[in-house]
Amino acid sequence: MSPVRIRIASRDNPLLAKVRRLNATPDAYRSLGIVWLEGDHLIRAALTRGWSLHELLVTARREDDGALRPLWSHAPKVRVVDDALWAGIGALSSKAPVAALAAWPGVLAVLPRRRSIVLDRVQDAGNLGSILRSAAAFGFAQVVALKGCAALWSPKVLRAGMGAHFALHLVEGATESTLDDLAVPLVGTGSHEGASLIDAVLPDPCAWVFGHEGQGVAAPLVQRCALHLGIPQPGGEESLNVAAAAAVCLYESMRRRAGQ
Image (tube, rainbow, N blue to C red; front, side):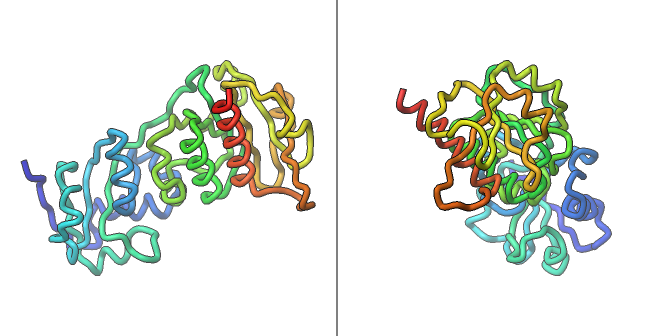
């Protein structure tokens, strides 16, 4: 059955108002219950992981684009948006011709005994997205974002994650006491502190802890860690970007597992 095709030619359309709100307010998805997937890459990544689309939106000039038509069958409604209006929604500088709305998974509980990542007040959307990509790439199942982190399902983090969101169990707004439910050792990270990542015995499964871009991991959280490791930097730099540090640590975990 072909999806219902609805044309949008008014800026005051209620659906476009929701889209603008999702892009203007990073955590708007929590109250609206939907997330904004901009571009066919994100849409295809979601569909590959079994997600359903609420609605598909396409700019009018690409309505008959054969390359996009396979996506139509995955949405009950297709909104064909006037080209002038399309230019005013979304956040990509080079506008993607297609986008979608999907249900936000909601507030999820921590899953025990999973390879996990704990994020402490990580603020930058690009860093968050990069960490999620590394997590998915290197075999981690769960990311737990403590209160104070940027919104994981914001459009900016979704774009930076490049589809990694759909491969992970994402917990938002967690408290330190929630971490007891992980039931795995916490491994803290720092620039030059603690034992060397190269020499340390890494528990598996574990939960790697990555902290605020400027302040690192908060002291109370450090105290919860079974290990606190530093990444050797013989080049003498002061510190690594948190996303780069996460990639190094998560890769090392994967490498050790593969060598067992």
